[in-house]
Image (cartoon, rainbow, N blue to C red):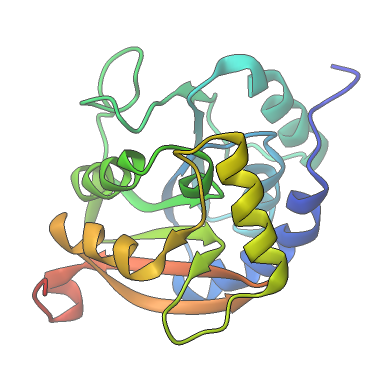
Length: 213
């Protein structure tokens, strides 16, 4: 493949995200990436977390060749072939047999604000189904917080998203955590990232010793 898909933002944020993931993940495990996109993240994380096996996925197959290119470029062997996965589907992946294993980590970047709100509940419910007992769900992106001033850049970004599709938009952190609680997950870490983004880490309620509120 001569021209893989390329995201300048993914290139900028992949190392800070990797460092954040290293702070919350054990040395080894099995990870599912939701909405793998270009493949830049999964290739970088597979190289930086060699004890982890990665399952990339996306709702569309047109980026699968790009994912393979980036993984080949990184020289990693701990990435499985990508699978079609629509978070709204009743079982994951969307094509073929249901996953036969549970994952120690599920990672999803920049999906919630470029998809309908219903995908948030679907992501949380799916994570609850497919995570191991002590597994973690990590989501990366921009969020609106009640006690944090939203940057001008994020406000403009939110407007542009909603102009593109009225069902899109930066999500309120309180709304996201509420959906997580309904699925038996609770926000355990909020990690500030560059460019006014956050990495959110969700764990099962019984693991963090709390009940949904």
